[in-house]
Image (tube, rainbow, N blue to C red; front, side, top):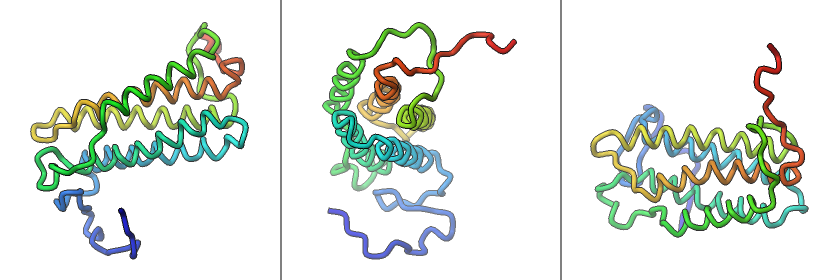
Length: 192
């Protein structure tokens, strides 16, 4: 269990932060950027959940599970493979990826077919989910860049999870737009 008695520690005043292994890294380190962007994704999903109200309990439950998973993913990224505590590290599991895929299929089954690319917008919940999707794509790019660095390996399920996450957030945004009926569609060259 996590226990936080003090919010400020002053240990980061020098521009560093501690990974789960205890190793200190600069706050601009790519690993810190990656799990920080996962945290930002989580916050954007929180905004989307706050706009839902009580009319979509199934979507609220999906988003709540994802927010919890994103803390797991942050812990995964904060513990480099081979780090002293890596043997007991919290890691994203394939079962979490599988659940995302099932939820994508569940939401997508209720959507009207796409005729064009979708512009971010529509209902407030949909717009917030589009923002969360864009942030999760940035997190994925950071994770890919981090994974390309020798000795900074990220486990495959974590990479798959963040890739599926953006798909789910896209489908969820359409679902929140009255099952796609209120999607804002791109019109190529409209303003030429």
